[in-house]
Length: 159
Image 1 (tube, rainbow, N blue to C red):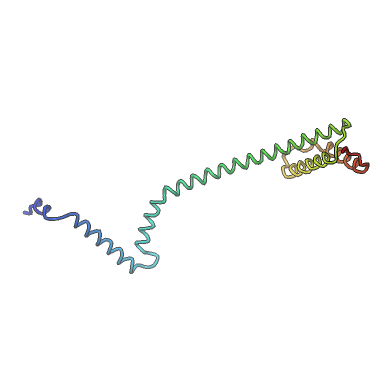
Image 2 (cartoon, rainbow, N blue to C red):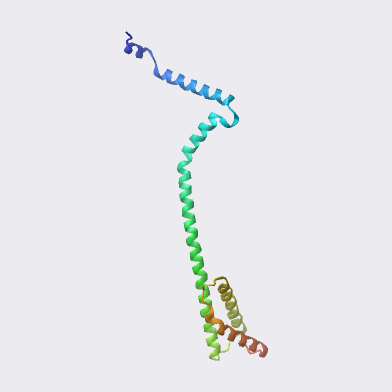
């Protein structure tokens, strides 16, 4: 019968494990040398290890990209809201300027030019946003343009 205690005291398991490791490395290197180009074991092992090491990074990168996309959508909504607010402000200025003209107030050419810029910007916004209500200023715009042409012909602007 074999005395296992005596056997294990004679065997150094560290040397055995180290030898098996070297044999495994040698076998993989030998296979690598003769394996087809697309079937290299070191490439497969390193790819597998790389995927394990980068999995957490890839997941965090995907989460970050999802957050950036959500934030981008929010920024677009805010930009649309700001653009609509600017159009409404231009509409208010147009209507107010028209009221001032109806009251007989005189304005400088620069003030008329600014009102005409507001009209251009407002109408451009209305054309690109069909759901936006733009019928509100049509008569006022025609009136402002008529008064502008009249004062331009008569040189009747304030200084």
